[in-house]
Length: 331
Image (cartoon, rainbow, N blue to C red; front, side, top):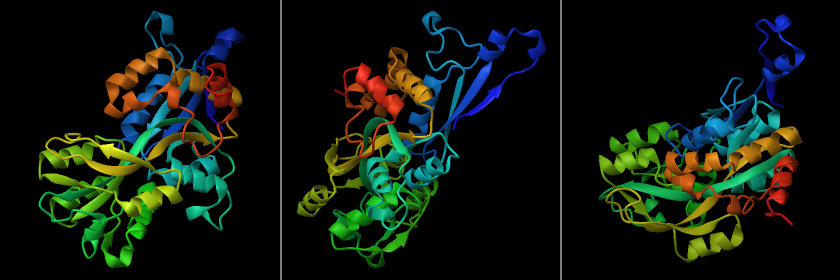
């Protein structure tokens, strides 16, 4: 549940109505590593939905967030860790890949044999997350099959990226024993490619991802296509995957490739108040938020109301569902 605190300085001198207006609700948004896309997008959304006591009114150029709400974007280990925190009630919300959300809610896939995370609910689909296979320029790695025997970071344990990397390798008849597999955090992986500790790494994030952009501008990189009949079969098997294309110059001087994507879902718990999540959802889609998203990050422009309920894989929170029904997105 959201953590509430009243600002009680001089409370005895304030009328009861004024005291009520000073109530603060803290709302955490777990994101991912600071070099990925989740973290900056989380910061934009936290800013948009916050409206601390004393803020200027929305119609006077102030915050258009939820009155009394203080939201914060918190770096984390990613999707799997975020699901665990939401289930445990240690975080009010978090960003989760659509595949991880589906498996957690249904108790299938990587959650087979474990209790279902049946409290998991969606606030919104945000944007597609491209699965990016990044190699150093001139590495000679031109396909997933070429990873055999190479030093490859699959991302850290607990991340959605690791799960998807394993699925992609399996589609090409590979597993971790066929590689020199490493499990570096997103913050480490760029330096590891620079110094030659690894030859390649997987990343699941909206492009352009800052760490990959830096590599493109410094040591030089190539993107490896994740495509072909093996990937067509993977998409048929797992409906949360979609075919996608990263365009030329998404990273300066780097040729585009065909790949696959999952969706970035903003998730919460069914135990969160319907009224609070309704207000949070309304603040997310306030016209003032549109301006923040469009100017704050390239992926922010893809966060659109018309796609908010697509590709979720888990039920909407009742508060969010109420908002989308009012907007005509759900009939």
